[in-house]
Image 1: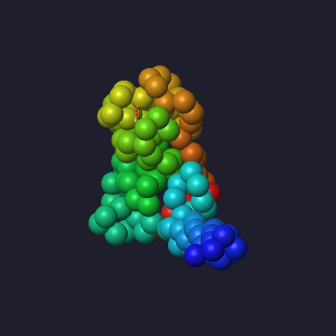
Image 2: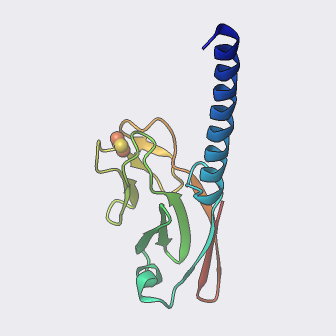
Length: 138
Ligand code: FES
């Protein structure tokens, strides 16, 4: 391969690589939105057994990487992905806060860091209730 052909081929390969990776990244963000990176909009039917824990104060359900909590009849929804190293957090009914089991990070019910190594708050989502349907958006 001569120099001219090598340069031409290299530019063509580079352009193809950029185009392919751009398409790949775009399709990932559109088809698989994640809490913290994209938007969410889903519903939970409180009459279904899988969501029955939410019918009691202190009950919680984790779905779509979001933890939904019933706190005295109102609802909170937060990302369940710890901002430290990405472990799944859990609601602790006794302490009424969110705990990360990996390194002891703790968050309040607004997602703010209470202690431990997490560098930032959990993403918070809006919850509205209509009849038996919770709608989580954000
Ligand atoms: S991953 Fe949650 S505290 Fe480290």
